[in-house]
Length: 347
Image 1 (cartoon, rainbow, N blue to C red):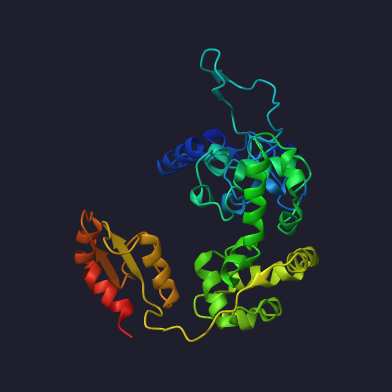
Image 2 (cartoon, rainbow, N blue to C red):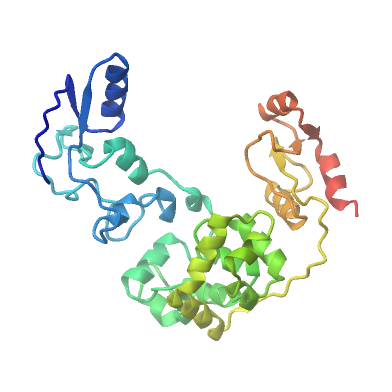
């Protein structure tokens, strides 16, 4: 750190540019005072391999705080990790609840918000393979039995029997489930690869465009991908970057060598909901919410959880909430479950 002398004088010096320091700077500067803001700790250099992980957005981590070896995965508490002189500065009795100062650019606002232990979307996903949950995956990783997606198919019953809480029946059931998972769809496989910004909806768009052909998808250029409705330049670039990494290509090849089969998809699906957005509120009687959303996606539409001015239909069932009022205000078509079923079944 370098200290520079300056001839300029300030009315106030604020240490830390987090929520408190940032607001204080705003209020005082708007009141006419000359304010200097300095950081409480060194700057995390995004080009330095040792500190660049600290500046990654939280959504780049599968779990906001999950890790088998560190409390916050990629993220440290602040510059210097957890071992900082004078920290923690506060603690409730003899509990483990402690207050640390976040000594970095942006303070708590920038840092704590990204490492906060809150659930992300993946925490609410069902297990894609019966019996293969996060705890089991962590066990396999810790034992050196799992280091990539493809290595799942190399796990044996004997491997599982050596793990805690695994008996002959549970081991046999999991191996059977892994074998069944070798037959999957293009969209599920692509989504499971973890390509940045490629969620389930984008994966289905890619499946529709490439008709389930992984080879064509692997060779796609940014320009080609951007021609797909719903795929923008950011997503296209992430996909091309993923396939430009040789280790990713090897991992996918290993999956197919292990017996992975992508079920063929047809491209004769109706496009009646192409570009349409359908939102649900209340309960459904004759079809589950999950099945209804899958049907919308099959027909080329989208089904987010929230309503907006871009929503085309609101399907309102018993117990409908405030979405109905918002839809009415926005002039969105409000339909019943029966109307919805007619909409998707009327060929």
